[in-house]
Amino acid sequence: MIKGMLDSALVARGQSLSGCFRRASGGESPSIDRRVFWLTAWVLTLVLGSGAFASQEGRLPVRFEQVPEGPHYLGQAIPVRLLVTAAEELPVIDLPEVDQVDLILVGSDVRPITAGAIGTMVHETNLYRFDLLLVPRASGNVLVPAIRARVGDRQGASRPIRLNAIVPPAYGRPPWFLGGVGPLELELIAQPEAIRLGESSLVSVRIKGQGAFGSTVRPTLRGPDGGTLPAEIEPETSLLDVAAPARTVTDRVRPTEAGTLRLAPVLVAWFDPETRRYQTVSSTSVSIRVEDPPRFDPAMIEVATLEEEEPRAIRNDWSRWITGIGMVGVGLFLTVITGRTVRRWNRSPHRLAVRAARRIHSLEGVTRADLAVGAVVGFLHLAMGRPEGALTPPEAREAIETLTRNLSLADRVGEMVEACDAIRYSGRRIDGEDRRRPLDEAPAILNALAHARLYEARPDTGRPATGHNEPSV
Image 1 (cartoon, rainbow, N blue to C red):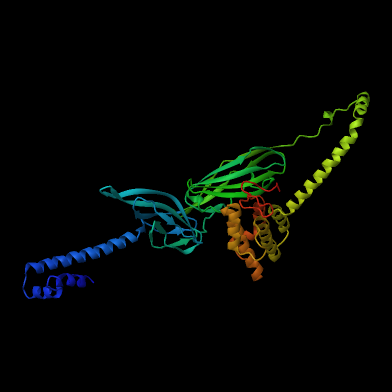
Image 2 (image 1 turned 90 degrees about the horizontal axis):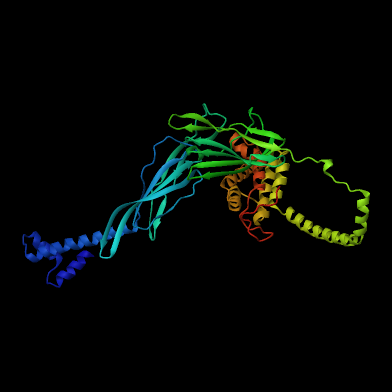
């Protein structure tokens, strides 16, 4: 194409490009040949340079600064930094969803590279740095797909990352190891610290540090002697604060006797990837004061004498009929309200979860799995109008996450449905403590659903449930 353009230009001057080159090879060197030669070089430079510039403008440079060398462990928060070169507009990065690893964005900053101006037009080139954490959730070879970045019509992608995640060694692993890799600190909090018998207190274990990302197992609350607490313990939430970083695990504790309920210090172990040894940290102990409710005192009852009652009976005799009519009206009103409340109570997904949690304690095997899956299906039908039918683990995890916005609870429900499907359709017992745990924890998971806050519209009322719970169960 370029040669054709030059030939056309030279033909107009009575010459051709090929002829110029032939004369140049024959030793002739007139001034016009030199001009044609430099014109050819200038056109080639202009065309090729503009093509390279256009290609550079269409592609957004995206790369990783450095990936830490292994070994990498299951549950370890691995820091990586993504670098994007762009103009003054902040790039948007798309983090892929991977089952085997969690990708967490923890921060970003910008560093200027160059700046220039032509007249009133100012052009900047900046280096945008995005700090990420990779947390493997499965052992073995883990592939992190390319991370894409875009600014307007320009986009680019990094190279994939391959990690080899290994399980922390079993040798020397304490029973209170929750899966955390990296240092951590503990804090035990009870709110309120003074209650009456029959009331409950929220006890939270706050795990702070890098080990919080992998500490997904709930810690155990015990008494001063290491035994079971004289209280009913219901799991509540497990929330991860990425900025801190910290994980707060909360249980609802309802004492069964008056006095002082003493909670022993909570022990949590974490794995040190540098020394390849386990370290144990401890929290402080917490006490909850439990008071008896006020007792009935017959001496506080006032009894009127006969002389005082006779004038009062005569004065109020005319109002008995009015009182009776009013009581009948109140009774009819309460009957209507009670009927509506009972009908709504029977349609409550929280009540369904409570009943299922009570029944599942005495069941085992396929019967237990059928009841657990049926309870989740019924809960989703009453809470969000999902048709009753087959429910896969990903569907259960997505629906519970949409309803409660609780990622931990959604993962537990998904693991429970997956374990139940394994025993329902294979007809065999589940081997392995990790695979059997979701089914063993089915009562606790259903109790957590019963107390979960819903954030979607209820099909029976049409009103949003954000910020409201069902009646206490």
